[in-house]
Length: 287
Image (tube, rainbow, N blue to C red; front, side, top):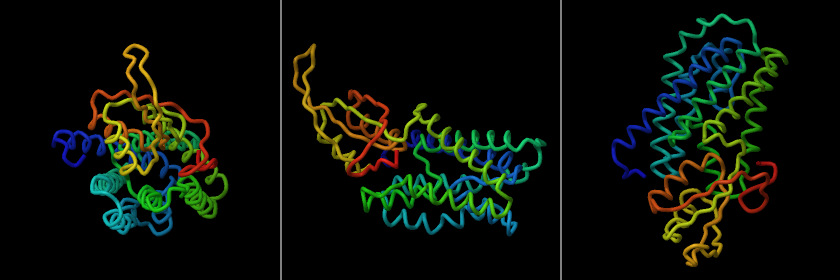
């Protein structure tokens, strides 16, 4: 994907910047205005901002620097470059929009948590759709997932966010912590909605292609997901064809679609919701 035309990368870059701007606005206009927290690294950065008056943008970048180095050592070049771009853009946007924290005067904490979660989720979802990752847990999860297919990303994210909420409860009280939970949930929901409106974390993929070997190898190597060949026959053509069957996480759908189309632009892809997945690489409680 690094070999794609400059215009293609430029388009992705523009949307990543737009996404990180929207996310930063959601945090500074609404979440900070209500003294709430977000999830992941930005939530940790907000804690540092509230307690030590360190702007969240600087803390976010500082926390991600060692993680970006880890990505450079362990992950592929595309993932690392796009993560660097998105992380820097997100940090800069948090700094640039920091002065806007008090321009909205709303006393309803529920409204602030809802709209903060909506904007944050939409922004992250846009950046994610165009292959941008704001670092943090994404890097750690991707590295550990590559080492161990059974690594549970959902559990890790839950634990980190639970710790953030508990710290928020200690600093601002239980009411603020509960509103933070609302905001984090809305953020996660909106990320799902932006990525093609999917409402489940795992997707069942059927792929029909004349280049089944190349496509299956790309999925296994780039996404770390297993692929099964099913044997079918076209009702109209009466031609026997291998059908690729695999299950991927929601966040991997945009990259999978791009890879398949790069290998075979005439391929047919069907994407279905998965209610539950158990087995190698997936666990029931990660759905």
